[in-house]
Length: 232
Image 1: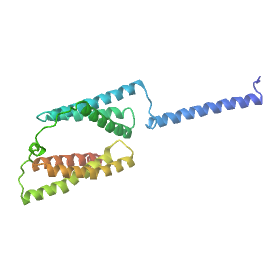
Image 2: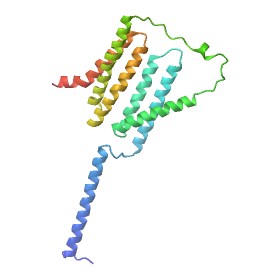
Image 3: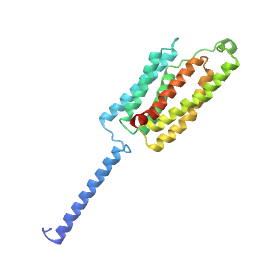
Image 4: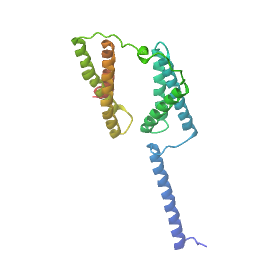
């Protein structure tokens, strides 16, 4: 039996206060870590958001496949397909950190695409005609030294400018940590540059390639530098 006012009662009360303070600090630290996105909090609403994100990814991939399988490419269906996929990333970012949302989103898009291709695949009987008879002729493209120089400038210079602009815009505007944004933006530049060069050299219409690369460059540099210019 502990009598109030005795040294033993005083020590017991101090020990209780100390344990209570420790519990309060621990709860505050846990809430801070959870608010930073390092420890995800799983709730029914977050589970519903993840399901919605997966549904948007599947719908986007289905729309893209439906457009690419058709005889004519429907730009509106392609736009809605990519819009659904982009919306799924936004929805997923509300359930976890932006880095995890990007990683899981890309993985989910890949898995959904593989699953849809596997489900819709069909086994065909081998054709008796040779592959040489079935091969398509390449598109006829005029070639001269002026066109070659223009293609080289587009592939090397303008594609590089567009790739660097996207990398800089990513490093400036993405909702990630500064180190992650800089590293990922730097890694994107050579990948996008190589893809832009390959696409520019394969495209028969120089005007279309030029307009697309100029639009990408203008948009990316505007995202990267326009807010700072307006704020100055």
